[in-house]
Length: 361
Image (cartoon, rainbow, N blue to C red; front, side, top):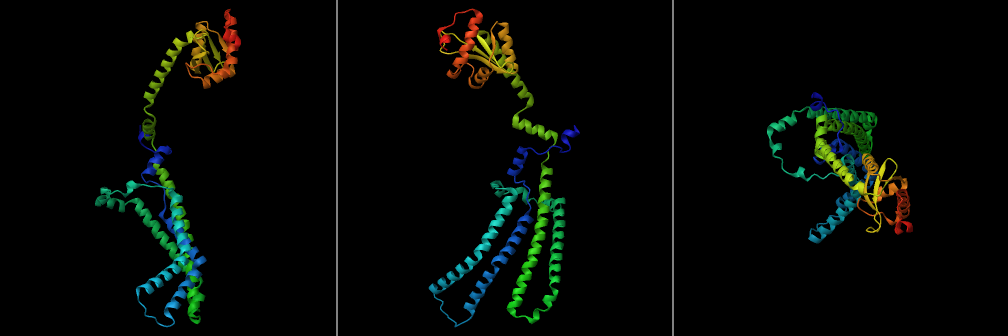
């Protein structure tokens, strides 16, 4: 009993995983998306930063140098603002496009496409202060706090190590021009951010792996939960067994009444059995009276022997009839020749005169 309701020793089923996904319970690391965005931003600035910097410098030079113009009419202001925004937008478009793509890919790559409109509904339980305190002072949040402090320490250590390595160059900045100082600060800032982004990305991957592991542990099922799900998905096993027994009995009863009316039973020889009836005066073609495999086939052969009905082994014919012809349906024209051979053998065995249709077949 303890084993049924205690430890979760079974892997989660596909149905349980789907239910959890529909409820928004998926393995996801917010840090992974943030770290990927940071790396993408730094990489984009390394690629297109010079273009953006030169553009902004030219805009400032054109606006802050030369003759002063005080034309503040609407048309001039609109044209001037449009040109400036278009220039800045075209320069920033590759970087912004890269960030948008990375943001979407980082989230979709973790959980796939997931739309949960129910999460947008108002949940009164979230306004309960007691439940809010429970969530705040929980083991999970304590672990997140500890991991956050650890990340701060890592970021501070990497930033300090990066700046310390440039200490000699920093001390010599006083002898450089303003433009050179700005370029150096931009370069060292990007390098430091890139190192921090790599460290955060590695920590985010570790966090994502942990979230996946924790998700699997949370979704594990007890034996009782597995049984309850099977009952929900497939119905009560006892009722199913009873239903199959009733269906099997109905099949056997139908066989018991239809097989004695057959003229021949075609077999495979042990796996399949098909009972055939043919009356040349009332039928255009032989008709399948009954068919079955396994236990049902054994039952058909037993009834046939009890009623002195010939049992003929024809493997190909038996397979074709069992697969393609339903009970009560005539034999297809493609099997007329094989069927005529069987009926000819049966009629000769019983000493009966062959019908004209059988001779023609």
